[in-house]
Image 1 (cartoon, rainbow, N blue to C red):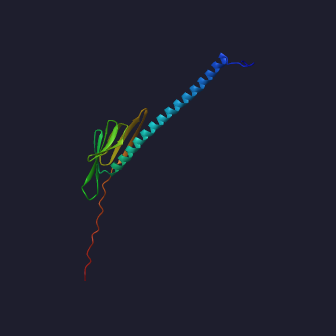
Image 2: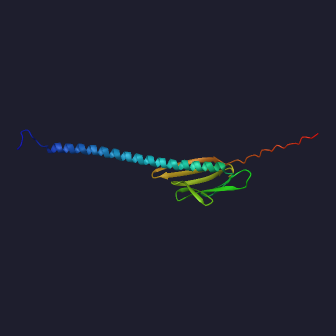
Image 3: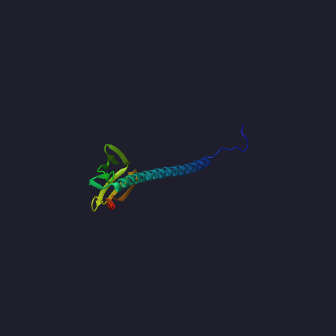
Length: 170
């Protein structure tokens, strides 16, 4: 039973609805893709910055405490005195291999940064004053470098011990 004035959709109306739906879908897919790309880029940026900051923190901590350093290619060996009086020293070795910056000390190893492209250790003047360290980190399409100039520990000047002169006894 058909009612009067009941009509279906014409082919033209159906094509217009499909075109509008396709346009809206295209805009939404493009927006979602852009959100995904920006989020991925932002995460990579944070990962690279975290690696560089972590490396800078550890290197600064150890270089500032070191009394001497030896740079051999992509390795840096720092000697840190435990106290002024004792002759016991701690040795830390920093090296880059297979994309990681590692800090070794007496058999224990600590990964400082995981996405390292290169590390360049170089000294200014002598290896007992300042060290310049250039670190490049990469995560996917994000690459950043940091150049650190760290001053090493200066040997403390010994303070003279006051000598007491005995007071004459009457």
